[in-house]
Length: 127
Image (tube, rainbow, N blue to C red; front, side, top):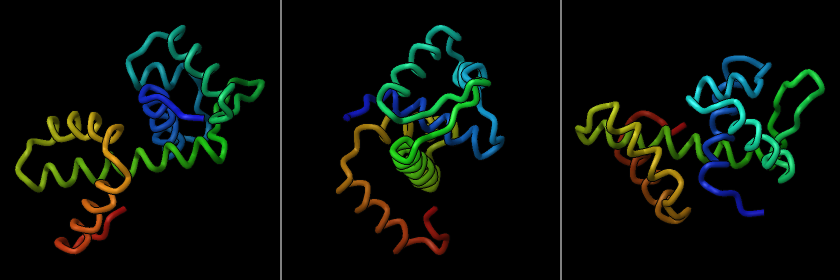
C-alpha cells in the first residue's frame, strides 16, 4: 500500500515520540504536531487500516514492521538532509523546514547519492 506524505509525517512523529517514551497515544501525536485530536484520530484509523500501526485497548500506539520501516526511512532522510543543509550554511530552523519538504519527494536513488556523498566528505558517520 502506498502511503501519502501526511501518513509518513504521522509515522515519523510516532517514531520520534517512541524514542522518548514507549507509551505513545493519539493525544501525544496531536500535541507534538499541533493538530486537532479529531484529525489525528482519523489519521490513526487510516494508518491502522493500512497495517502501519497497532492501537492497544489503552490507546497506546505502536508501529508495525511496515510502519517502522517507513518511519525509519523518513526519519533518516529528515536527519541527513537537515544536517547537510546546516553544513551548507542554512540556518537550523529553515534547514529543518526544508528537509521536511524534501524528505517526502526525493527519490531513493537521489537520497542514496546524497547519503554516499555526505559519508565520503564528512568525518561524522551518517545515522
